[in-house]
Length: 522
Image 1 (spheres, one colour):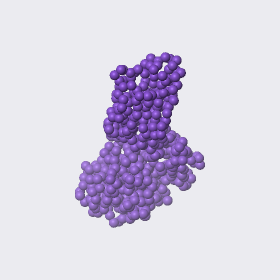
Image 2 (cartoon, rainbow, N blue to C red):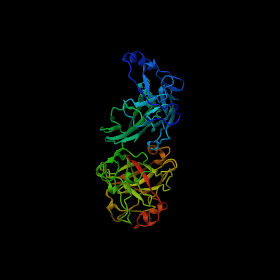
Image 3 (tube, rainbow, N blue to C red):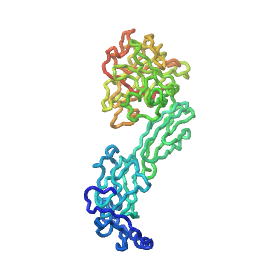
């Protein structure tokens, strides 16, 4: 028997004696079921009739029980111990930690998990004792939106009580996050996956007015899309609702789905977050995507097969001076990162659109967000360039809010390495000058915000991360080139390169985050 430390009034060794079955049934057990409840206490009182009948026997040198056997826990109303939702990490379950409750008793007692085993999320210490002392209750943080509890049998003086001891832990607030809440579908039809992470049960409510839209659920993954082309001549939109159940039935989270009328659109849903270059990749995002690096980003020339095979034709090239450097183009979860923190300019070139017949006038739009550190510091390098590889002329540019844009065609020449323009970004030489160009600056609100937007979804809705330009004379050979660097990186003299390692960069870091590329015929 483990004897409790402190507050101990009686120390004795008692064992249940043989009892007449009739007496035990008609007297002892019946009276054990009579439980007294005192304000602020769990009180389990065994009213054992006829002590002289030998219900309990003790050694002669032990103190005898003074009065009836009893056991209660101060502060546990109606047998329930309440724990805070925050709990305590298991590695901090030291002897002196946890919630302390004083035990009042005059006899041996035991606390036994009703299912035989202690739940992993909590602990009681000690589980048995003799007389008065202290119980310690431990629990880890409760991630669920519901109260959770564990129930225990209480045995005093060898006899089980009808009333159980319950440890109850308060719930967390309801939390639900999505990997995407604004889906763009191809004009020809496409599907996108959304991962739902929630601490409460939920159901999907499709948009009954959007008969063209399909929504399928597989555990916490939703597959949303359509195989029907959009021939309406305009974008069409639907809203899918994630709704809680039970006490969370009033909580709703919308997912906006838009099927474009664009001739080309890419939301980079084919970009995964690989754990490394050879092992299986993870199809759930790192929600702290704005600050993760290392294995959570994979350079374009090291893309794993599932990403390579899904790539519709995006490429990145090395600079024209240092052919061994780069390409500094990386896949993230459902978007592209280019540029590094080591004065290295990144770049990416769009696929040619084979469906274009002849020469057409188009509007090209995209999202470009600034990089933010783990401490929520915005990188100063907010400048990027867009140019035309092949036929086409930039006639107009658009930016929003404090973001700015300007056409610089005729004012600069961008040396480019088209022979190295492959998905692997192999080394090439400066073989072409890009003269159709525009310069853009990301405004102060076009950055990720680690504090207010930890999932990295809201930034793509901010107008300051949205840019567009009109391109006249676009053909099936036209490609759009994006370069993340400041003006000092782009040497204006034909024949010079734009490798940032040459030391002519204005800012140390030139990282940009790229998504939602769209081409619409005007």
